[in-house]
Amino acid sequence: MRTNELKPCPFCGGDDVEFVPLYNNDCDKVGGKIRCNCCLSTFVHPEANDDDELVEYWNRRPEDAGD
Image (cartoon, rainbow, N blue to C red; front, side):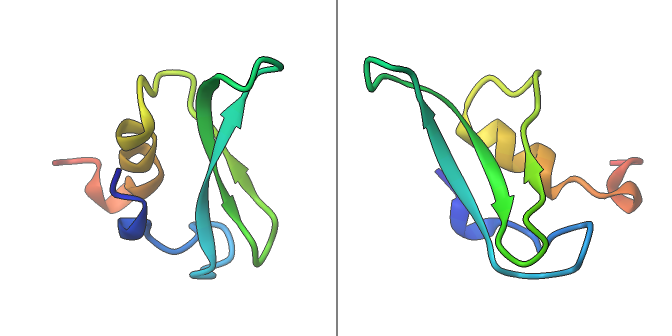
C-alpha cells in the first residue's frame, strides 16, 4: 500500500494524514479510511475497491481532473 504517498489534507492543508484500516466485529479487515489529524476530517469513498484505490481518490485534486 502506498500510504506514505498521501497528499496533504485538501480541507486544511495539514500534512499529518494517515490511512486507518477498518475491521468488523470478527477482526476481519473490511476497508479503510483516511484521517487528517490536524482538522480531524475523515475520508472514505464508496467506490474504492482496495486501500491503494482509496489513496488514489484521496490524492485526486480538481487540477488533476483532466488527467
